[in-house]
Length: 319
Image 1 (cartoon, rainbow, N blue to C red):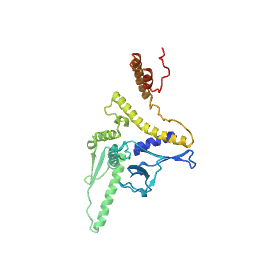
Image 2: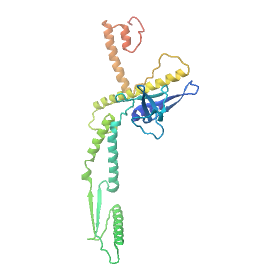
Image 3: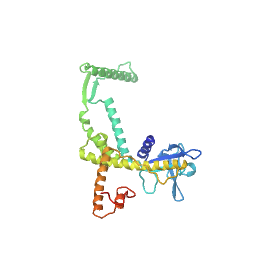
Image 4: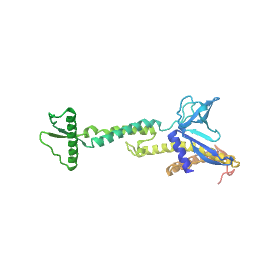
């Protein structure tokens, strides 16, 4: 079940929706398999004022006006599409990290550029080697002369590279000129550009750059607030997964012939810190309710329901 939960969470984050089918066995007595459909391959067609789910065939691309005759109809009794976000009446889910994709693309271009600089120019700079061009000989045509010049430059490059490894470069005075060009001044502020892009990316991911391993003026107090915010975001994802699991478990139990009134899936608290804060808030709530009951403002039944109990255990308060 842990593997299924991880897949559902991944679908929500990457595809913007849980998209799976609870496949019943041929005798309809159990759930034999859980099949995950790519949310991007699911098309919703409006029929009779309601949207119906269809699966696109291999090689098809989405268009605004999908023809249901060209699609594979999905069974609404076993297939579930649970969108994380949505826009207006459209049933399609929107991935939560869409706004970070552009910044990720920029970072990829930056890395490509840095790799090029490291490979062809170097971290500290590059060497300019100027060689005096020899004259064209009388028996040389233009093609032979060009090839001789190219060979001279290639040989010079190999010798300069070999000399830089050894720390020694040699050449004829007046024929060779060596000059080292530093790139430090031109790339000195690259960290500021990189930082700006990372901050934009973190904003698109909807959490602070500190969770990317970057400490951009982040205090301990702000980290605590951000951590609490992240836990609330995780709870939203867990609630959608729990709803999907409830549907699958109910389908399996009904197929097996079980009769029941209700079924509920609940996740444990994400961290010890989360549990501690929850218990502290519960303690304050119970203390306030006890005071209200003691003053005669609420009755014992209201007290019980406020703390999550459907009925009171005892008509009279314990002394």
